[in-house]
Amino acid sequence: MDKLTDYSIMSFGIHKGKPLIKVPAHYLIWLYENNKCNEALREYIKENMDVLKHEAKKGK
Image (cartoon, rainbow, N blue to C red; front, side, top):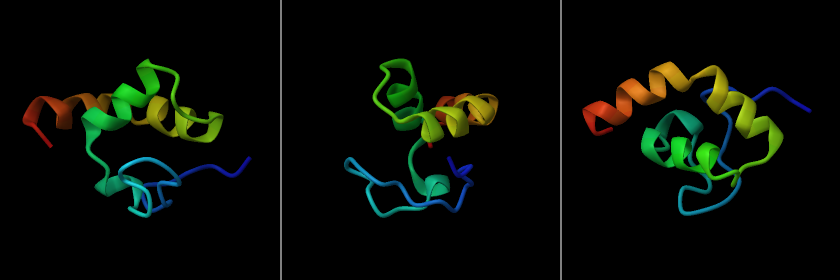
């Protein structure tokens, strides 16, 4: 399993084709909380959860 980075491309959903850094934080958190992502994406979100929660609060 390759480790995902901010510049890895989202492979499914309404943000398919975007780098992960451009995918809205609230969407990534939702995927994680609802088990809607593969293990690599789950690990990426988990590692970045603090930043994602901060961005979600700001409305990004």
